[in-house]
Image (cartoon, rainbow over the protein chains, first blue to last red):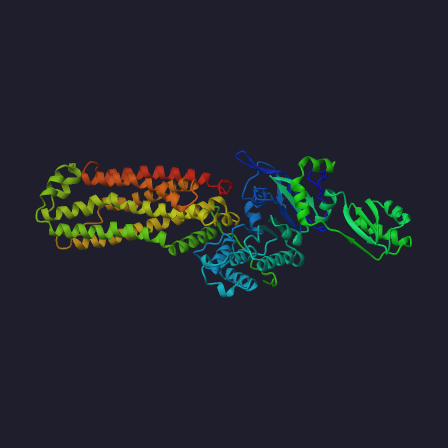
Length: 336
Length: 288
């Protein structure tokens, strides 16, 4: 779904039908003359992983700060868990967890002391703080490092500890700002696996601010592409690709070149944008995945043997750079 | 990294507000900051060295020098330049008591004020600019603490040690001053009226002034060093005061000290109030 599409108060389609836990309407914020976030419309459902994707300076961190009540908007409205972060910031922050881009650990304190401080700040008693800290240290396999000052930790260790801190109070919404920056591939995989499981297995809502395309593609249900503070596009990666390339390309294996009858049947299916015979069947473009399902049903119900079908997914890089290279007007025209 | 079960507990966080301030949260920030400061040599060493030199070494040297002085003539001529109200009680003392009483009982008092000012300034720079420098401020802003409570915590992080070190330092000074004058001066040199006003009235005001200034300075600084360099100028007026006192150009007696303390309180509280009103998440994050 492209930015500028009239939402009628509804978010672009998502597999998550849970309640909307984050809503922004025309959310804007500037610093001096520089616009950081510009008229952002966003809905995030409970249990969803939404990636805010964009280059440095796109407005990702500012968006997280606005949603968590750290910054006040110049214009627009925000609701997080039904509350206005601008006026009910403390209650919002009580129910959210944040991993900032820099781990934000005090190097003069030990791992345990850093976590216990956060637990106390979140209102837990001393005993409960210790219990939660021990649980997190176990969970992140950092018990053997608990009594070491964090100044000597590697970037990966600091990120893990910061992640443990963000999850200490079992937050309903997790804001993750560049969670894998500075991590080696193994640590990156660990963190992305964890984020994915938080949403899938534990129902957490995750807002992931990142400029790593692979990361967003692997774990996000949807991605919102920001550029100079503006929402350029939002939706499932496949859907974004469909709009950018006039459909999702797909190959259908019919065991031989498609007959004119098969071509005609496919052409008549709603959502098919292009069809062309190939040596082993045909290549088509469909508007979305449901159209693909209709094509297959139409072919098989008319006696055509279908030996295989595959949609060629555009890579995250394809989506990202297509958005980067295209002027905003083209998206707005496409939306109309 | 594996994800074990998400913690489930009935131990829900509680807030414990008194006068609208979440004191457990304030205490948590103060305790963390003080613990971290204790482990920072760059902060602790100057914070303890200056009071040690001013309040232990200096009176010790003065006492030793006074004991060896053969003639108090210069003291007598110096007393002649002082107002009668200040010089009278000292002049009435036996000649060999006059130097010790004058220096330890009166002239060092303004110099002592460097201690609360310096300690509060160093701690405030660490508490405000230091958080930015260590990239821990952003994390703090994302925690459920009100702007005002965070400011109070940061203020107390600077104020409490400044006053505590001043008072402990003064106790050490009193012990040293009375010990070196033992056998020469009858009774105790300190505390006297001037010292009591300086310790309990002016010193906390000076500590507050240092904090008020450093809060403003730190808001414009990205590093502790930058804040300390900018804020270092706040000590200059006290140096002038001490020099003035020592040379007899500027004389501080009890009434003047009390009035000066009141003036400092007014200025300091105004600066703190202004600092608090500008201490908002939005400003801090916007400048980060």
